[in-house]
Figure 1 (cartoon, rainbow, N blue to C red):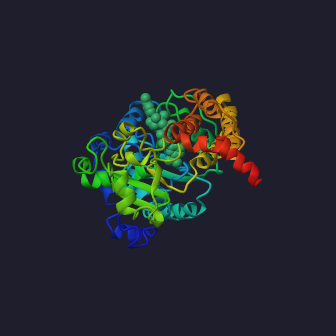
Figure 2: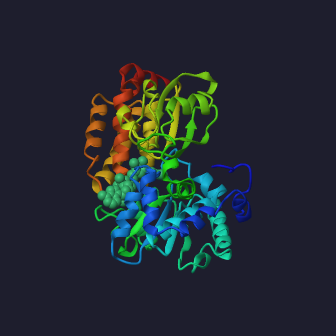
Figure 3: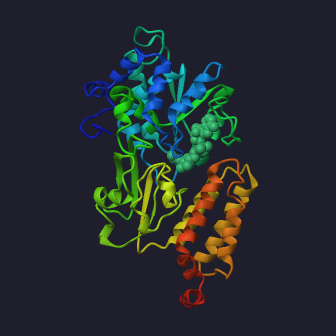
Amino acid sequence: MKNIDRSDLTDMDEYIKFGGYSAILKALEMKPSDIIDEVKRSGLRGRGGAGFPTGMKWSFAAADPKKPKYLICNADEGEPGTFKDKPILEKNPHLLIEGMIISGYALQAEYGYIYLRGEYPKAKDILEKAIKQAYNRGYLGDNIHGKEVNFHLYVHQGAGAYICGEETALIESLEGKRGQPKIKPPFPVNEGFLSKPTVVNNVETLANIPYIIEIGAEAYSKIGSPECPGPKLFSVSGNVKNPGVYELPMGTTLREIIYTHCGGIRDDKKLKAVIPGGISTPILTPDKIDCPMDFVNMPKYGSMLGSGAVMVFDETVDLAKICLRAMKFFEHESCGKCTPCREGIGWMRAILERICSGSGMAGDIELLIEVSKNIAGKTFCPLGDGAAVVVQSFINNFRQEFEQHISKEFSKEIKVAA
Ligand code: NAI
């Protein structure tokens, strides 16, 4: 996000003024395999949520003899709480384009697609304008900068389905089919777009590539956590004084993010809970906020880095209602392909609705856990797992919030009030 608010970087001249498009010139002097090695040595891990090593993913696609190869940028960020890719797409589109050209060259892919979430119409116009500028200046198209390197780039807008952020559903959608996930393996690196080797990388991942080429793998690997280095974007929302997107070294603690960068809890209330990496990552109690936010350390504290979407809840928030809100989202977004997800999430929503409306019954909490266990690990894609994680982690950490709704005293109060 360097210079992102100092200048209009959507204008190619401004981007170049601040050093843009110099990494591509450096990359074009390197062999494709050397770029892949550089990215491997940098330690870059995917920023979409899963943290898969980027260089390793690239090397799998590069080693597959099938041709042509494709590069897809997953710009369908839809995880509740996640809005970290938006500033890149809307304010620094050339950084993503430069990252994609370098990645395309490294993979020997001549076609790239940006699969953009339907809810980001502003970004579509900005990206298309920037792509046109890059074509006009010879950075996109055939024979880039006089070399025998071709790369064509297109924006494809989704229609507002969360599931199309899952890479196999995304590929189906890009092929013009209904966006539903497929079982992996085969992974897209071997059988992706049009059944050809395809690398799907998140916006933020690709935006790191020019920087890695510019400063070199060694310098990059010294930023942030040794196990998973680099800068990381955190989108912080909820009850903090200054919500927003923050670029910080990987491994910055949740405490530092909340209290130093976001100014602490709004109205100086007490912190009740934090979801650290988007709604699908387990909720944490306040005693866990000294966790370093990276892919390696977060599991030790009982959660995951995910997409780095920090959602902060103060003492006044009713977490049972948050859980219900999340379940309505997952029920609405389930693609319906597999039964445990399609049916089970609806059941969990119905039980939570009963609990939150004061009609909860003894045994409802156990029933919720039982249903969640019949979803987790039994679906084609992680959407069902995400819903199960919400129910299980909310109940494990904040059971009393649900019990209060179910308790006789509480139900009586509701009935009297009604
Ligand atoms: P995954 O672990 O299945 O895969 C991660 C990436 O590594 C994929 O590109 C996959 O193809 C590749 N990969 C994994 N193993 C491989 C192998 N053996 N060979 C070749 N390639 C391999 O995770 P997935 O389903 O892609 O992502 C799940 C994560 O997405 C969740 O942890 C969640 O945090 C995040 N998420 C992010 C959202 C957002 O808006 N940014 C939305 C929803 C979920």
